[in-house]
Image (cartoon, rainbow, N blue to C red; front, side, top):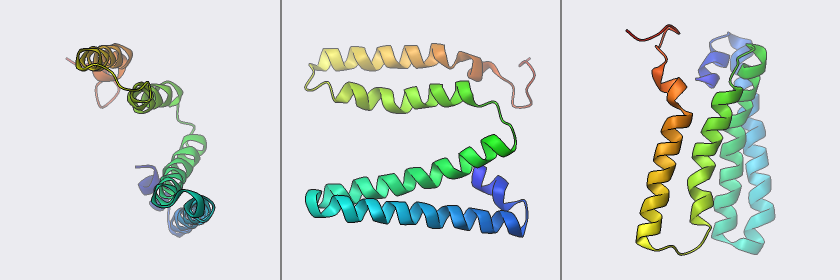
Length: 128
């Protein structure tokens, strides 16, 4: 959506979007060049992840700032949702019952934290 917003602004937006893609590609390839010799395929995967992350963050950051969006709360909740489950996975081997409890706890917590977003009407008003 952020990239579409930028490119819909005309030829300057298309140029800006292309420059962001080139920057992301350059950073990703740089990360691969640094990581691959030492870590092999995992280094390539992490380098790709770095490039893809930069490609996602640059347009979001630009649109967030340029259009003065109020996305702070939503961004923090989304980061919590994206980083929470992998963080639990790094705790090590867990028993199936413990893993099920953690998944249930995460689902309930995520629903409670995101309830304000779930209740919003697409046009900003209350649902009827």
